[in-house]
Length: 119
Image 1 (spheres, one colour):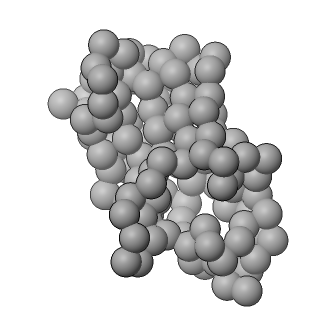
Image 2: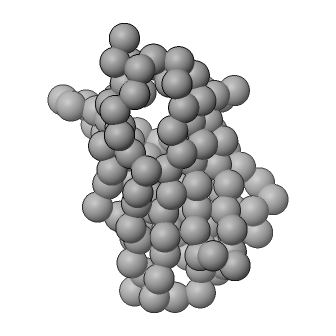
C-alpha cells in the first residue's frame, strides 16, 4: 500500500505560480511512476502530467505544456508539480497518483488539494 499526501494548493491570481507537493510513504517510492490529475467542478477527472519511476521521462497534457513541470526527488519520496502562468481554467482539485512500474494504471491516489485561480 502506498499513501500519498498532497500539499501546496491555494488561491492565486491569474498569471501567478504555485508548486504542489506529494509526499509518498509505505512502499519504495522509486518503484512507482507518478502522476498529477485534476478535477474541476462538474467535470471529469483529467490527466495533467506524469513522470516515470526513473524521472527521465515526463508527459504533460496539451493544456499545461510550457506552463507546468512535473519533477520528483526519490531521496525525499516526493513528486512536485510546478505550475506557472496559472489561468482561471486551471481551477480544480489536484490529485497525486502512483502507478507501480509493472502496473497498467494508477492504483494509488491522494486526497487532493484545491487550486483556485482568479481572473
